Length: 157
Image 1 (tube, rainbow, N blue to C red):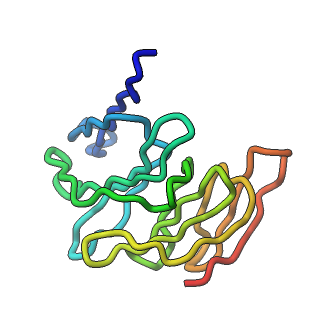
Image 2 (image 1 turned 90 degrees about the vertical axis):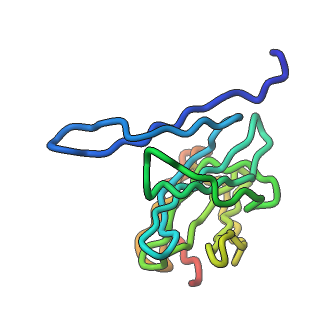
């Protein structure tokens, strides 16, 4: 009500001796549509989140979480032309490739190279509620609208 875009805290956990322990946290001004881990290269682990507020979004933040107690922002930018995204998933067997499923029915396939994401392809599939990578080019897409069943799609590598 005060015009603030909200505040989200992401807690990073580690599993040790069958117990989850908080290893670190990240404070985000705004909302997170979805997030996922991916390979930053060089044995580094990245965490990417789509951020925004309300119907506006399409911005991504990437943290290097290789040392979870000290997450470091390594990139911020736009990944899908301002379209709100509630499904973010890494591509199987393609390190550094992440798909962002937009509320408007598009999937932006982005590649991490040179320290930033570049949109490699945009695929129109209809409303996207979730994305699951089945192989390096095959995805399973679920939709909230109209009770559509899970739908496999091919996204070129």
